[in-house]
Length: 395
Image (cartoon, rainbow, N blue to C red; front, side):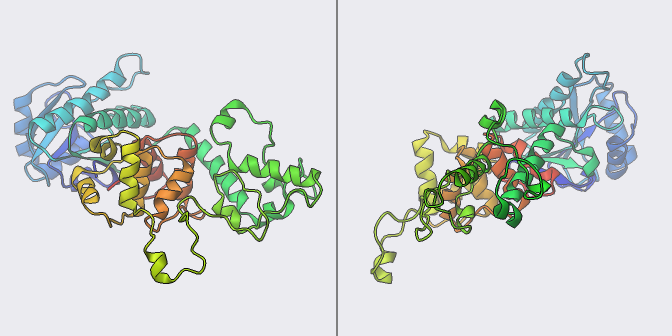
């Protein structure tokens, strides 16, 4: 995987280079700096650090790693936070970019970072994370390297509060769609004896941001319930409840209860009355075949796809060379994100590997939110998944 976010103490991580948030003067600071000196060997590392001399914010230099599980320690100096008007963001960006460039110059295949300057220097954690993702992703577009972002505890890792608020609202809406009470009562317009408070949702009059973002199946279901109430019973046939999951994220098909919903990946030829041998002669495209057909249709190159999917080159080569390749779910979803597939297209791609999005899995709900709001940044999605203690995407 090109970029992983892990929860650990950075001194326990094995990588070619370990990044240290160094003291600007020759001496041992607090936090990560102190831990690294203790693990690497205090006297040996301090002697090597003296040869570098004083450093300015944004600079990076290296020493041997001594007793750490690494070849090199890359020392970089973060800025003290003074409100953001004194070039602090630019200095943190240089810390990441210069450390990555130095690791490449040293021939490193892997590097581990802490969240720079977020400890005693007080840099805002959500902004530090945004800068880290920007600089790391920019570097990985042109280079091959495994990058580890090492987070010591949950409190040291923050993502935009508004983003979490939106996701919680989205997950709450999705849970309502699978709530038996919601299906039983439908929408009566206001809360009251016939409408439990937990089931009340916004009506058709949504603002433009909601319309372009999260508006989808929920609003369509609400509109359908209104139509059922206003139209004669025979005018709007009821969709069997079992079909709600199949139509999640799609326009709700108006079909008779006797009809069945056929997903887009179903064979386009009649199978009724055919023998098993006949049916097996007409299998649809495999996951691998369909994936590379989509890549060709979009005019993308292999590096563009595997870098956007957070998949390393060797793994992607294995996919291309094996027509019967069966991906893990996180790899399949990463590829769907890289290709910027719609929710329906994502379900189609997953189905070809025998996989599906589950309404009972938080990780799948988060990914649905990101797809429906057209957020196809694999690194931001992985930050969200990590914050919710869910497995991240890639391979």
